[in-house]
Length: 149
Image (cartoon, rainbow, N blue to C red; front, side):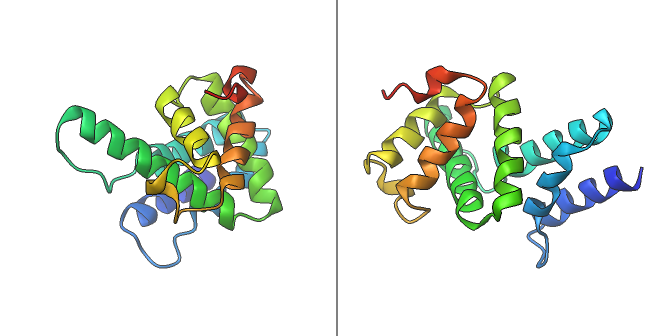
């Protein structure tokens, strides 16, 4: 369908860092009654925010840590810049990701560090309230996320 092609185009434009690529705009399609559209939005959002392309190589532990920081920064930036409709849609997306166990515990831990002001690598990304908002969104699917570590 045209919607699926448009989602692919947005993801590709974002990957190439083209001006005007606004992947946050696609989030509201998560409310579609068509299961294929909702699944495509979840996949596209996963491609944009859970698989950032800016992390390269290094040792596996360092690469994993850098990937987690990159994912956290992207999500924090999204929460900080999203409008109300996008935030509501993001909550649904994050809930689905958590239910599918796509959000690693290392991301939860890093977000908790940001909430407590103990994550200098995220300090410039967004206020602690953005990290808490993401944790709250994940807790819709799994309340144990809100247990402070």
